[in-house]
Length: 87
Image (cartoon, rainbow, N blue to C red; front, side, top):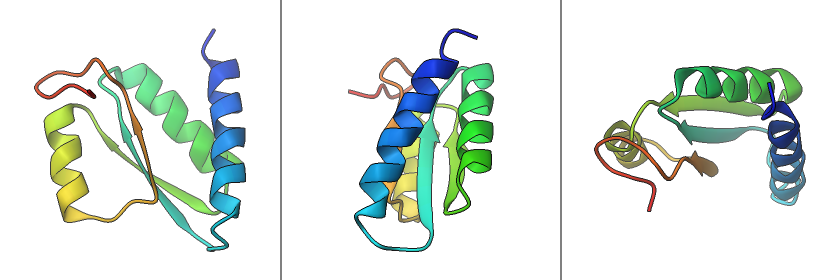
């Protein structure tokens, strides 16, 4: 798919950013309504890094609930989401 290159670039930037924190494990929340994109990003980040766990939400409402329930080091947020958008 066309967006794989973008995912690789984003992953590289995320790893560089998170390495500055010096922690061993990081939690990422991915809020994305497109199931295929959500799956590709989750698979890529999970396989490409042994220091990151990825949790997902299919819409803005669930993403907000998860944010209140858990602590995350990084949130990847689609801006065009059902129920509550990413703006």
